[in-house]
Length: 248
Image (cartoon, rainbow, N blue to C red; front, side, top):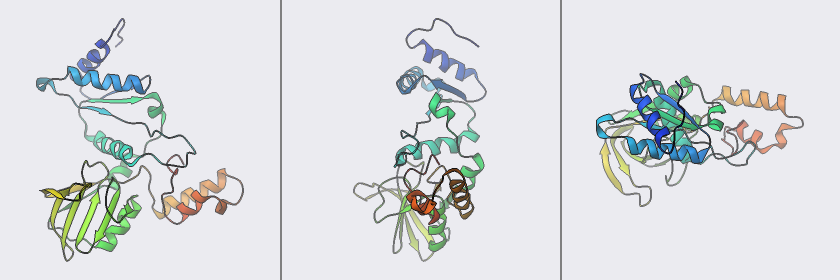
């Protein structure tokens, strides 16, 4: 299918109509971020309740190779939320730029394999849960404020799952989840109860022992000199997701 002579918002209207008639998700590659944002707003403008269609934006990392910082946790959360839903998506529009399209993605089995659920009444072992969260890239903090963080205080287990829009507070009675509550990270006050939550990996790469050994081996192969002199090598060897590790 080819369109010619589209002006103004007719490009977004044509994409919307094509996605409505398609039997699979439509991937739209924008020229740049400005074009991407414009298409997103225009496609949403043409939507109506009678012909609703999910429009998803796969954001760029907003950092460069060898930067000494990683993508913002909110960006990683949005990306993983979308990537985890793609295998089950029947229809919709996925918007992204060419740079994002060329970037390597984690395999589907990694995202789904590292995902798990917690529900009221389930018995959990805190030490095992800490190890599982660390392997998935979560950070232990004193107070949960952003995606990918968790905190344990006595019988309270706070966690902000990647892909979620709010953090959750698990009330434990011994090793059993007695209650799960949504809470506001700003004032830490509970808002509502829920029965279950889904946890995605906190990063787009694993930190398992096998993955760490693979990183160490490839780092020594590609970079000359003493690898122990490089902070990123030392931190990953300890199992820590060093800032700037994502492009590696």
